[in-house]
Image (tube, rainbow, N blue to C red; front, side):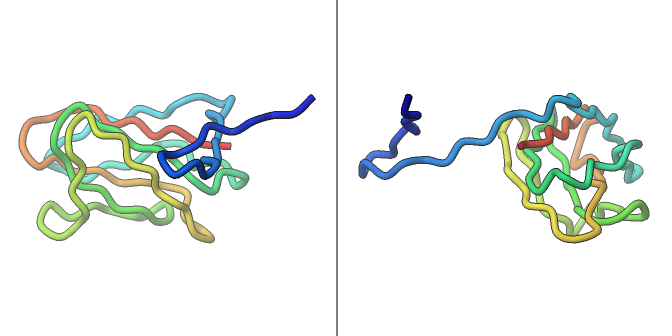
Length: 108
């Protein structure tokens, strides 16, 4: 049995990743930087993040914080894939407006 990957507009295969069986971590985002309480599993090399409101994020270790002025901006409702480097187990979020919820989805 062969497995055919979906193709892009040029006919090139698109690699697909599944969702981590351990589930999604949800983080309440406020004006104070907060991060996912549980570290991202060491076998996860890519996460997808999305938020219900405008916010900023930063990837790092258990002490990472997001800066409301300089961290990358995350548009509400837009999925963003973020590769994780060695030792990067947490993602911090801070609001860029109203309080919201961010979701961190491990990809395998």
